[in-house]
Image 1 (cartoon, rainbow, N blue to C red):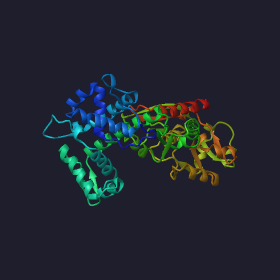
Image 2: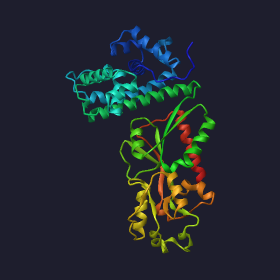
Image 3: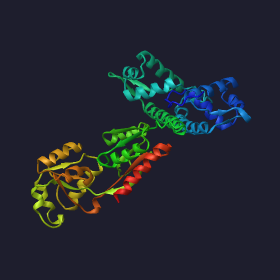
Image 4: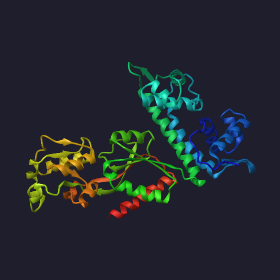
Length: 405
């Protein structure tokens, strides 16, 4: 009897390769010949995968064929192997006929990812629950297999080479594909323990993401949603390593790397936000007539490098006014709200970001021309293919966006 419990990520890489080869070759005999295993060894690998996943992956009757779940997982494995093929390209082994991917172990991949991320054998050992000597030995074995240097010892820990960082990223993306394959099996068997990892930028934190997540979890209460908050650069790095599925928030111009795709959802028009009793609100008429007067008040500026900071600079340039010499630069929306309520400072923000304070009568917004709008959207990895549950969240997100129109 196969288990119906949700599956964890403890699948053997070599067993996964066997399943992929079954999809490619069609029968056990050809797989055994191609990867130099005996037929019993091939069957054993499939049985172990089935025990781990809790579902039937290969039907031996009628000449043998993969089940629906087997084919779905094999397709994810094929995507994972495309990432791992980078190890063949980077290898400087004297034996160019060897398929390095077939020789790499899960231990080596996990070690590579952890040491690159931690910058230390000891920290990686703690994360992997191994001894430092074991981690170092595993790293050296991978260097020997590839015949390249991956880590250089420094006074404080180790420094990953360019090759190590690139290979660690490819390995992380390979495991991300395998995780999605496992999630798809869970979905097909009614175990909706799918992981959805979202990077969230300031514009989406107030209502877009909370509303979308609430609707999604009402429909799929067993799904697991993780939300990553933090600077854009950190979120982009997490996205490129497969640690999050996509980023929700203001799109960047230009697109930061050709490895991601930005999908616009709607244009947001920021405005000038200030307290309800702010002296500037005594002016009547079009803001064009008195923008220069606003320069006498303190301004809260967005962080350098953000889309809103670009609009901030464009705003002053548009009105022919120099940016204030003394800006209070702040990226914390909570802190900005508090500063605005307690002072005569002005900030460039979206009305959505301060909706609670507007509704409570604490803050007011002066609208700007639509030319100062910014695209809000999704940033995803190029070639990322969502699972059914991940797509269901994107559908809920689209529904929320439609409600804004």
